[in-house]
Length: 169
Image 1 (tube, rainbow, N blue to C red):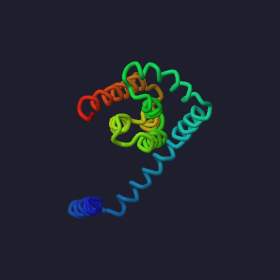
Image 2: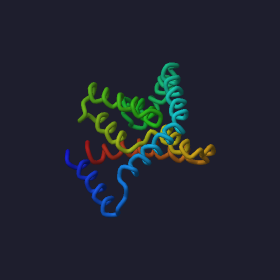
Image 3: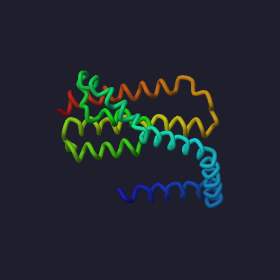
Image 4: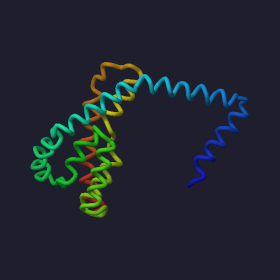
């Protein structure tokens, strides 16, 4: 597996040489574009990080989890994954930390561990993705994007539980 990236770089370089592309100049131009994009989206990312930290520090996410847990139990969701379901659209790092805690506390082969694994692989950090992608092209009206993306995350959570019950339990 270690050879894939060097092989990919070599193929791109050989292809560029065949097409007579000035490789170093193209690389420098791409790096400049990357820095320009980073400068454009940095305020959006910083704002999102501050908002997520404020939600966590205020205890709002804990309050939401406590409110939703009885409903999750009634629906057959493992209560251990409720915080991850709620945090995953907001924070990739936070949800990965929760995933690690689920593995430590219940084991990766437990029902909660399997559901959390499927959930981690089938959902997106919705708010981050919207902020970065729409922010980089200066789209201010996202229309139905947030509702559609959060609906997809909810569908993925439900499907994760059902899939693990049907195929892995």
